[in-house]
Length: 276
Image 1 (cartoon, rainbow, N blue to C red):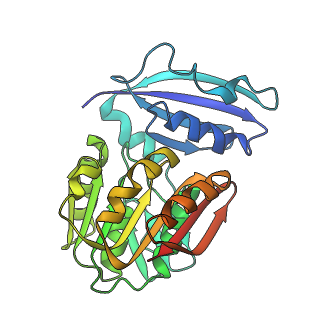
Image 2 (image 1 turned 90 degrees about the vertical axis):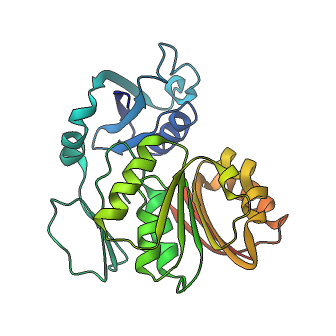
């Protein structure tokens, strides 16, 4: 596995610049983000990094925000220490806790233990938080679930705790795939199977619920594939995009027979559940 490059962006004012910056960095192959009091920590594999990596990040040139940054290499063996420094437990709707192994066990109904490493999906980001909220409102008992772009595997793990079976977790990134395998084992999951790859892995598969917390462009590109792998009365839960993308995402879903059911918003990010 490759080492990673850490960028520390100092942002003033922090919102909505932080959300815009994270979205633009994700479009140029940055993989993981941590928001702190000063701004954003962003990580990219050394294999994908190049000196002009920030040229297409337009918000850095915006006169509305003051953004400065520093850069340093993060050796692979130091990553756990980085997360221990930045990762704090979260509680969603007083029902589900997402924490690291070194945090105290909570009293919530659902307790998910995550060792994030380089993977996206700790629950701290608005999109993951809303996806957890959406799942908590669904009846997943006995339903076949897909967690597309699984990151840490947190949504797949929660789906099992909500009695879904079987569950398929897919991510194109090797770090995420391996991290999901570790977290599945850490949470004693029996019905989650993880795979490294893209939407082509869905051929011949069928699901009752599809979860996809991915960027706007990938959602629009793969919507046809998701739809083909879903039952006539399936549920589709999406996030990873801004309120400004709501209309485009909804239009795409409606083309495949999905109707919007529940919309959540945190800052400029949204999550929408659809029903066929």
